[in-house]
Image (cartoon, rainbow, N blue to C red):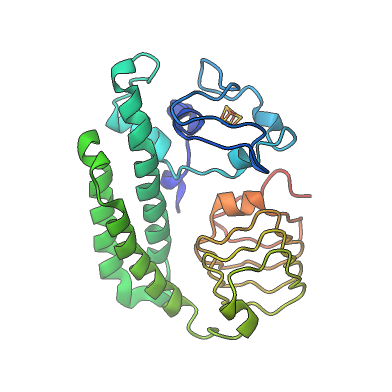
Length: 267
Ligand code: SF4
């Protein structure tokens, strides 16, 4: 369903490993400035430690998702010209990539919203906004650099908020504690009825959601790093991304939406 908005590293010039900065933290073992290739990046654009990322402390790489922006910038916007061979455009390409990544992320959410029968009354508006967003990704690099990305994000966010309200309307405002706080770090919510709950933007770092009912819950922008999802049911969860799931812990009993793949590191 959402495969065309998924990273395809073979057709990308490793833009995330070059263009983006990262800082020494729980997610990265050292710091790097934007525009500088990571020291583990090989000349064929592959990662030398791809199979050992988690063990070596590169959690940020495991959880990163470009939503297909990498291949779009590499192959379409810059017509397959590698930044290594086109130093004139390298800096511009590195600046364009994070903007297109944001647009592709919006497209991913909009596309999911369009698959929901509960949001039928919004489909015309969603479809129009999807097309408007696609058009932005097709602009000339110089125009992309001048986009009012915050303004466009706010239009998309308004629509996604309405989508969420329609989708979860039978279950809204059940849990006062969750409604009233953004900070659910290390919270124990084991075995809770959280069906249709609104977790948008909430910090669920290391929260224990094991054996909870999370069906139809909205996870847009939620931080699920190290959240425990053992035995939890996330069937029909809304706006849950592969990178969020990759950052969480789960097992063979965890039920995830069909558009998400079970991470290899889950037990
Ligand atoms: S560790 Fe590998 S995946 Fe992460 S930034 Fe470096 S080259 Fe890329």
